Length: 88
Image (tube, rainbow, N blue to C red; front, side, top):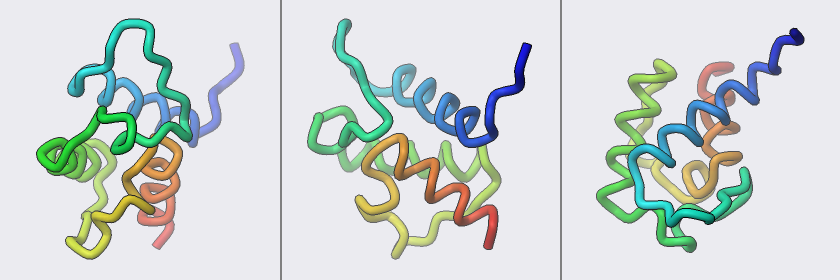
């Protein structure tokens, strides 16, 4: 069995959280680049839940100024944000 790349593991954990904690209609496919906000999956309250998850699951702090769509709008953007924070 081959090991999964670390980024895929991060994306997988984010996807699992989104699917478990937000309403995603059966049959909806959420690609890594799908907008969680425009798709209606995450609202303003959901952003707070997402931040708590990121901080607890990945051990990174999310500053108020970082709570922008560029960092949190899709699984891919969240994963990239986490990797940047871990590398800082």
